[in-house]
Image 1 (tube, rainbow, N blue to C red):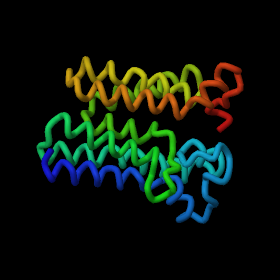
Image 2 (tube, rainbow, N blue to C red):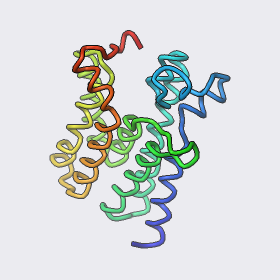
Image 3 (cartoon, rainbow, N blue to C red):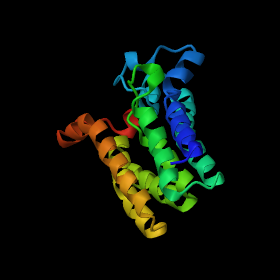
Length: 197
């Protein structure tokens, strides 16, 4: 692995470690989102606590953490394997941010950003799946789980890059693990709908 690849992977992790939800809430004069609602520093909890505007900004910030380093890796001509490692590092940074005591979000927006960074068609396929399931089921976590579960399938058929399929599958498994509480609430019929968020 080259020095450039190592620096890109390390930089992606550090960028991913910048918790958009916490930073946005602090800048806008709100309390730390980890102290209220679900306790999750993500856009959904920010929306629940403080409304649409800070949530939208946090969502965009979390997506950019995935998009920017992966696009940068493309522009630098890194190998497909290095490109997906850069995206994976950004995702890990979001889940386990070094700047916030390794207490991060669930990774949906950052993973979606990585998908857009890999290629626009992949990102659009995953994003469209999220929107479709959200419209039908009206449950944010269900939308995220279905969309990310299908992400490796989309990558296989759109790009055929096996290394991307493999690490995206790992991200999906980790994302499902982070949503285990949501999954249990869905099984019990207790998960909030998007309209209630």
